[in-house]
Image 1 (cartoon, rainbow over the protein chains, first blue to last red):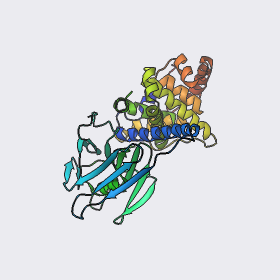
Image 2 (image 1 turned 60 degrees about the vertical axis):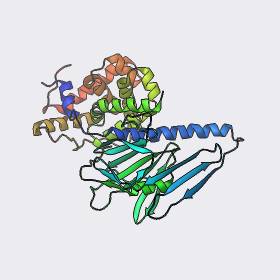
Image 3 (image 1 turned 30 degrees about the vertical axis):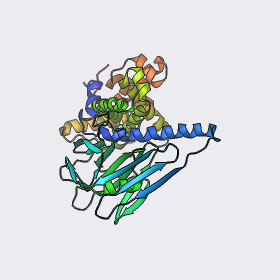
Length: 212
Length: 169
């Protein structure tokens, strides 16, 4: 005679399975962005007569062997933001980066990824990603979005209100999979600087694919 | 509520509860591993979007179980014409062969139940929820839970025997 609870316990599978909470959080971020976007769009319908601030974008590029800089100027509030790179490689766990975004620092590295935030960012939790760069390695498909070719390598760019996610397959000689970075909006990153930074991410042998 | 607080709490919840939710989803889907994972992902995404509400409710596990059950029932309602079939995807490589066979047999039996009957079995006999809580989650009367449970157990007994004999609850 078998107790049904015992049978169901066995049928439910192992009590411990590997998973990557970052993947769930990323899905949550995207869904929340879509929800807010819809709410925002609904709100805009009600204030259709309101003016729309124009945003001008100016890009400055330094010498070939020097740092490059992208600067955005907002016509609405005069805010100026930008990302400049230092030609200074750094290592975070199994991940190596060709360039250092000036004013940003690694908050945490783990086999499945790296969290990078502005220096002095109030939230120091490495698994908290709002306002931060999140570098992830996984075995999922590249995903949707705009396909951009950089030096023969395909990158998929997906944009939402709060984040831009860019994905690319790992380079030859690296563990097979997809490396993707989630960039927070409003922190000075442009599509060009995002692509440039991700192009310089190298996945080492100790990296593990996140699940989900 | 600051976004970072939401993230931190959500990560803690996922870390603590994801496996339990996946096990529940495996039973609901009768061992369809990919569907179970989809259910959990959808559930967790909904939880994140509504996290302030989840937090206010004060019982995130209960909220997640309810959401998971609703997602499952809704999904099966939409895919009603698609007949559920047992699967070979019981992923427990560490389990002895006899246990895997038993798990497969139980999942195959669950697959013969209608979605809401399966949900009743999982809520009542896997999560050990009482009739009132099961009725609340499923949005039906306690009488309906009792009758669905009785029909489900009868069906399970018929399907499982003589390989497995169920004790009387």
